[in-house]
Image (cartoon, rainbow, N blue to C red; front, side):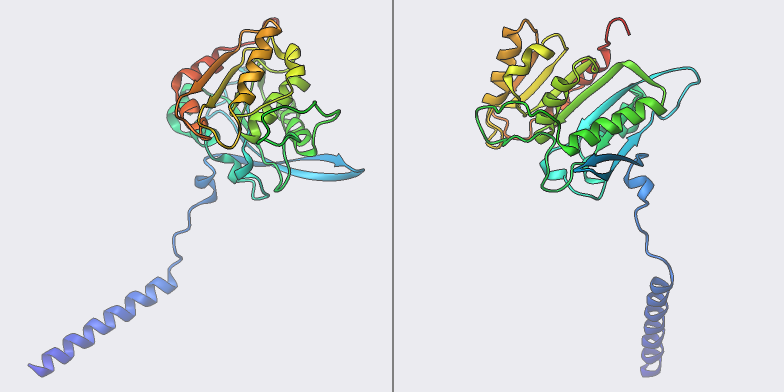
Length: 275
């Protein structure tokens, strides 16, 4: 009996050693970058800041299938402060991830451009905790200029439908969306700023645009007054913006907004006339 127990223990020990050796020898599964990024390509643009060229990375998603001769809409997404950095990955949270999911990618084939703002920098030079606005700066920040350059590059190099370019962003990106729309009001077919704010003096420039603004009334990061005042300024300038103030919702008003199928249906239905 003791001999059998010794043999059994020896076999068990040998199996454990062989298993451990196999685990060391075999490569551990690592999530594929391609799978993690859901088809988003790494692209680069360059802007000049203080007389020096500064490279910026961004991500591009193409429609799953490109039909010859067909042009497709484009969504420019400006992320929030929490996704700033230089990994060129964090900015894919939320809308870029959801638009890459097979059901939405099939329902809304489009280009998605997702630039990344550098750490400690901003799309728009505003303090998002302020309840009142600041005047629009004479020039965009370097990071917003890089987002414009990325948009220019994709429109130049890909079959983009120029009448269906959409702009959206959340929080810091909501500020960026309002500002970029004011700087290039002729460019966008629709704008969806989420829990951001802007210079109300610019409202007349974008009053003609289809705009759907979202904000949670319990937001403690960006005061809901910022969206309320901008929507009021648009209406005073003759615009007809859609505004969804979400009761009881805090700063994360983008999840219920983007996950509401009616928003994407509305967005992709917008088209600039005459283009």
